[in-house]
Image (tube, rainbow, N blue to C red; front, side, top):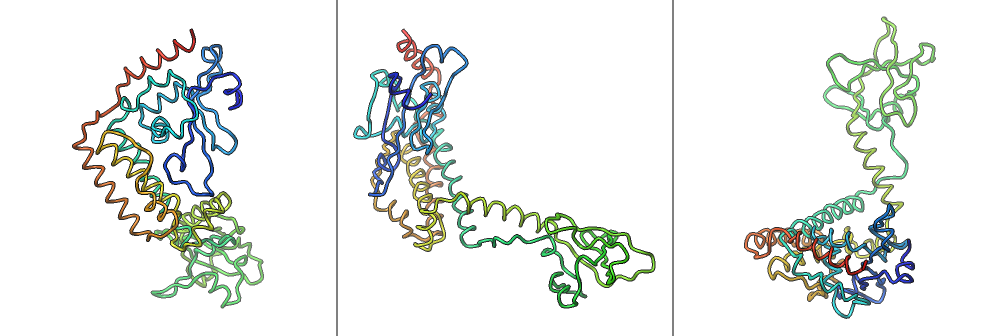
Length: 352
């Protein structure tokens, strides 16, 4: 089933303009996001073809089946509460039955965790992005050999540099474990490659050093230390960084480069907005998604605030939310029994 099917079969219950235009944060380059609610034809609802959500390819149009919509309202899901709280000028269509779903019946102290919890997740993402921007990882992948050192008294030198300085080849080396010394190996060298040494690494992609059989009379020429934990962390960071590079939003990335503050400014704008929304709900018991601090939020989006100042602002909002949660008159949870009865009544009317 597609969004077009919802329209042609008259299955829509609610349709709104969402995102920046509903928040009052749109600019001339803003996209138009559409969200909505639908119900399924009776045979599909009772059969095996229950479809909880339908979206287009770019995911800027998303519609929720009425049962799924109520389920997410009961969890105080930020996106879903914001759909129900859409300003009148953003409502494209509203079936009369949707009047039975009132915002006041769903707002609860759960918003502390749903709104603020989601915002904290975004802060962690922003910190991760900050790390990626400030600490780019070269495309040429390092091998485990880059994490090996040669011990020299109280010091050590990089194994790659030591091999080069001594005109030695890693393929001609042989290693054996040093007893009771994790990650430390005695290193032997076979200039003529006649002793069957396996080298320090089998190949560039090896994730452990190679051990060789060493003749009893052979003499080690050095001791090698391998930082396997450091290499494992590098591999994880490398994979995450280059996956981000492949999937990143180029327009947002270029914006972040231009303002030079080393954070995803659009992400941080929405993070602050979410925290301010949670603060509003707990302070007033209501949800008005049309912001009254447009200029401040757009300044964050434009990268006009320092990264550390934004993190401090987020921390202050989180502290305020925690305090308000203690004194708020909102219920701990929405009245799920009332919501379920309302959902049943709506479906009974739809399926008469």
